Length: 144
Length: 84
Image (cartoon, rainbow over all chains, first blue to last red; front, side):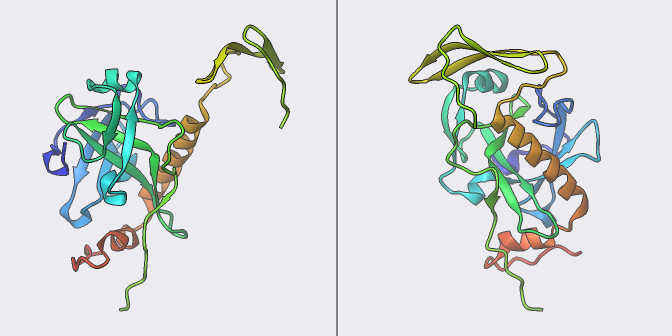
């Protein structure tokens, strides 16, 4: 699934929520050209709850993740190792962008969304080679 | 860190009515069972870390401007940033 295939009015079902927000089971994925390549994952139950995301492949061209049996059942895909630019799933990293520190992205727990099945989850990786605080950069101040 | 050697079938007790049982062990890992009161959360550490990150990410998505963040993706591609 590519970013272009996101349906703005679509609601994606997250049957397990995401860690720390297990009660939030329905999300929208908003794409605004002004924010490109960032995407907003917004709870359909609590509009105030949103996450800034970015396609993981933009952070690491060779990004890969594991789909275990449980994850595969939820998403309706085959288990195994997947590349972030695969056809079925959109693979997003959630970004933490505090005012005072450089932004970072969680590549240890990608958000996976199946566009056809309209289902998603956060696939927490075990013994991942990727960090839960992957630095996004370089962040340099542009001269005015 | 306290280290205790246990075999499958043996367990360790923690205060608060918590018991951790070694069910299986082998080269692929150990299978543990947990007996604990309902109010005790038992989480794989990586899930707990993801939850911590998600809380921080949700907070920062409420507050910050995205200008700096966008700039970090747009260095060199010549695209203008969004109006702020």
